[in-house]
Length: 310
Ligand SMILES: Cc1cc2nc3c(=O)[nH]c(=O)nc-3n(C[C@H](O)[C@H](O)[C@H](O)COP(=O)(O)OP(=O)(O)OC[C@H]3O[C@@H](n4cnc5c(N)ncnc54)[C@H](O)[C@@H]3O)c2cc1C
Ligand code: SF4
Ligand code: SF4
Image (cartoon, rainbow, N blue to C red; front, side, top):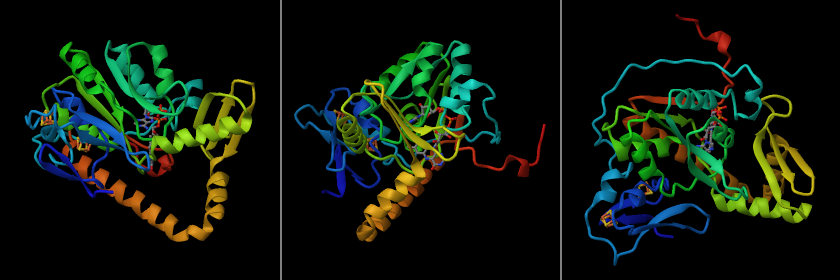
């Protein structure tokens, strides 16, 4: 596997490319296509015969533009909270993501976030303009999402003057910031603290495995099902034939670790890789995410240790 990706004569380390698709979204000639590698992660490939060497793709790449963006730093505040109604159950954690999305729609704005595809084999960036459309955004999909035409759709919302809120992983929000810079005062972003997503290929294979085992199609799938509250997280799947599968995720991970104990070096390498990804994401996003940005994370903080303020 090549260690570098080339976009318009500039090189991006494969390890750093987060598959944000900003380069593909910006290309006026549709000369960039996203292709899955062996592990199922998406990387850009340029169709040379279409490329006109305009360099627009390199100007929006959050990796290549690291340190170049001129975005003013604003005040920082820290809040903690959670939904107090029944809606809390389907959110990944305290439902701050859902509450923010609702507030934006209520103000006449438009929301962009990530939903599963109908067959639960992919995660896709979608646009929501109605309250009932927000349901599919709830819950964490721990896989790399496909962006499709999302950058141009976001730009349409921004140009219409709508309050536009984009939810995504830190690298994706870094890409949104890099793509739109400080051109729109109606752009709001919310990033989810992230340990790095897995690839959609793993999800596809897992869904396929469950469907084969239970001889039916999955009609609902949740990797953070709150059976007993926020912890321990459960994985839950419902099938067309009425079967329901539930598994405590901690037990599932232990089962997997035991199964692969003979591959301990692989597990250590994997954990190292995940940690590096996370540090990299924080490095990239930390530099440029300083305005109208919200960061949300899992709610395991002990809130009573935080001094109350007005
Ligand atoms: C891949 C991944 C890794 C994460 N790792 C950590 C971690 O290590 N530590 C931690 O504290 N929190 C982590 N989170 C964040 C956490 O899981 C919750 O998303 C966060 O606490 C918000 O919870 P909520 O109840 O407010 O969100 P909800 O109200 O449930 O809303 C969920 C929001 O997440 C967005 N979303 C869901 N899946 C994806 C995806 N694949 N890509 C982009 N956006 C998505 C949706 O658009 C929606 O806006 C991670 C999330 C993801 C998706
Ligand atoms: S240089 Fe221009 S035409 Fe070529 S891939 Fe990049 S954006 Fe597309
Ligand atoms: S813009 Fe995104 S997908 Fe394209 S090379 Fe840069 S990091 Fe990778």
